[in-house]
Image 1 (cartoon, one colour):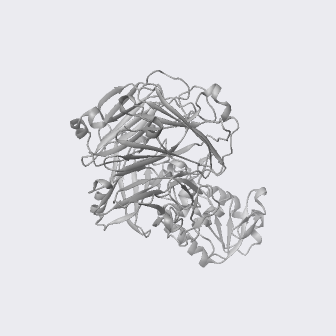
Image 2: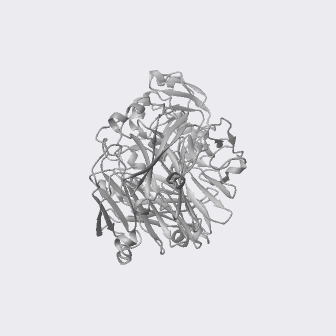
Image 3: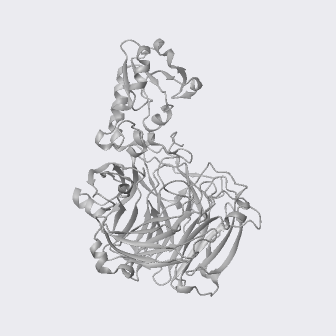
Length: 635
């Protein structure tokens, strides 16, 4: 059963209403409002903005004796919501209502327009009683301004064996934000609030670190595994909290990393890998709302199959459930992949792979879109946009690491994947190409790059791969090409994985908002990437790739700038990356350990290039024992 809420539209962007009524601080006022109305007698619901169903989805109104549902828009008359047919608001005087619930924030205007229609003695109640305090708002005049709800969730765990670090920067300062304060709410596994607090953020583009060890110590908490709600008060420019998330512990095999959860719950996710014989794959179902996830509202299915195995238990509000995928799909085996029917109950989830050896790694699936259709023009782009949509990923040194790719369908209408894989060395020379075929939706085809190279050596000992469309055997494309990339250390057997989607890179011609730009209109032809630094003796690795759909500048002009935790620049190092090449480096080698120490906890590297769009991957390294890897984010 999917929640009847609108969270994100590729046309409209994020929807702030569900964030406003589902905010942790809105839960108690919403319950009080409903209890008050239930005691008052028949309630007329006035719904001028069409918000009855999303409000009811998060805060059920079934305890109310309804005196009718009323609307303002003539086209909305007769529609069904709350088990009622909508009537024109001009019918309100004839209703037996003892109270009128106006489903709107900033509701004064709506109330003034209908005050003369309200039955005598009836009380008028609005959603303004659920508002956050004014000191939490950027725009007090427009409550549903997205910047009032720059929020996100983060997986958060701490016990004697493993810990969590959330690292980001005050990138809002770069968009003119004057003061940023984080409001934080920590939920335990059962959804109970363990702690609420505020943290001030230094002015400028300062580093931000939330360490689970410090949180447990500060609040005297027992071991925990739940989620952290983060609200950036004062945000401008971006209404999403972006971050890198590291899981680490006393044992080297505990090292892994992932990133922000994508703040808008989706109907479906895909790209969840099935386990190998010696693995357990755990999907972390973490409820993002103040209402329970009902039994049989979340399910799993093998990619390409219509048979969904449903989770036959409820998940309380804001609670976390570790779901072993084998309990629902016992026969699933790598390289099969799994779709998640999520019903908008949670933001992009994490999954954890646990080996019999005790090694663990955390990663995320991706949003599976239902609004895409195959685009017949994509096969025709080659004459204008060269390789067109391409998905770059590292090829780590083959003598040390296995680099594996698994193409993953990421749209419900995607029936086939016509793809090829190109491998480039660090200099930009193409080493080899393989046509993977016109893969069916339910394929289970993974490819190891070393097998493809067949002994061919890469300059500098590493390079990168690009997954791209190839229509030689037919097939369709929608521009939403995704893949999972898995890396395994041949010496320690430690592994890491990440997944992402394709874009058009480095061409002045644009096609449907590609090459994508995160700040302004397409084309996006510059780079601003955030690299968090290691901690507790861990080094930082970074793999920068210069992909190009068409030939672009022969070399990048890339600046690596080391910043202290206060955001002040400490050192700068310039590099040149060949077009279609890459650069793999460690922070300790580029800046030296003394300067990294000077940067302090929360120091970071900003990767800037005004001449081309780079794509990056980052991770941590624990000597020869373990490593982590995920794609980077920019702002």
